[in-house]
Length: 114
Image 1 (spheres, one colour):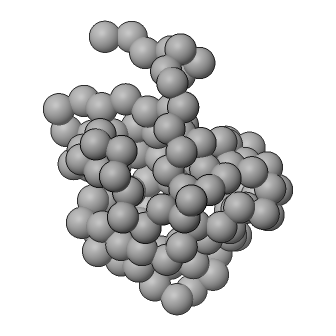
Image 2 (cartoon, one colour):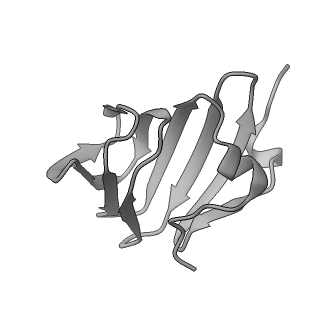
């Protein structure tokens, strides 16, 4: 199956975080456009997550520790580890989750800021 992100409707994960995503049997892939200065509240989920920063700079807070990622950097977030962050510039992030993010499928993200 072939997916084209530009043809997938955007979903607002949280204020300033617009994602175009698709789901396989085992994972969710989300191409996320993040507005400059947008903040994602600290949260956790049982899914393993790999965040790949494609454009911009993003400050992650992982289990209380700050880490700044720049274009070309990737970060692994183990399941159930508290994390959040903020965009230091406009960003594009490719997030990969396993297993599938059922809350993204349903559109009901518990930590979302509207």
